[in-house]
Length: 225
Ligand code: CDP
Ligand code: CDP
Image (cartoon, rainbow, N blue to C red):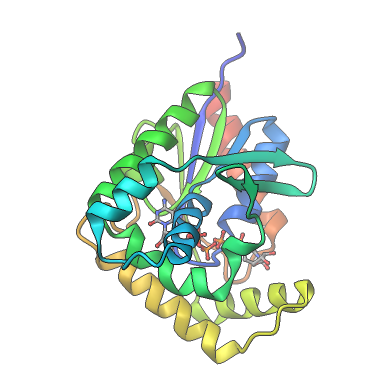
């Protein structure tokens, strides 16, 4: 059995976590787990069922009856909600604007963390989110905290939308990112914060490739030990 490690990648919205995590996972032939997609999936379902986003008991019950699957496909990660492919729907502005309210509920987080920890038991894993290095995989051998200026992050999301043909407004994106970062950083349970032993990388002026290489260097360093 080849020695494998766990790599945790955290940081604020649109810092480049998922893009870089995917590359690193590919290079190491590890599984990639996008934990944000799980919070987005339950948000999509809660909105569809018109459940108030502060009703923790009802939302927790809903989550317990919900199957969220992440599949690795050539085109990227696919997300299935109770068997339905919701890969595109979970990226909608509506889901984006509401997800942080559900993600701050302690019982929702506990259930998600349990699921994420069981996914990670399979071996080599790259997981991205907000609380991976601090709560989900506190023993991860490599912990990365990606940051970038809010202007740069908004620009990236804006360009990404343009590429995908999704109409959007730069100022609106900037406000949405600021709002989400504020809710994610100030919540009581597992807020967005750099783990003490995480390496912080400011990606404002760095390409995807440069960031991926930095993380891989760190991973190979640990693997050689
Ligand atoms: O890709 P983007 O940075 O826009 O967000 P995401 O990673 O898909 O996460 C969406 C939201 O889920 C975040 O704004 C957090 O509110 C929540 N989240 C979380 O609370 N904990 C995680 N481990 C991952 C996401
Ligand atoms: O997962 P997270 O929300 O942190 O960010 P992402 O979805 O991986 O990246 C947001 C956008 O920024 C994507 O369109 C990436 O291609 C782009 N990006 C970039 O231009 N430069 C980087 N160093 C990292 C990401």
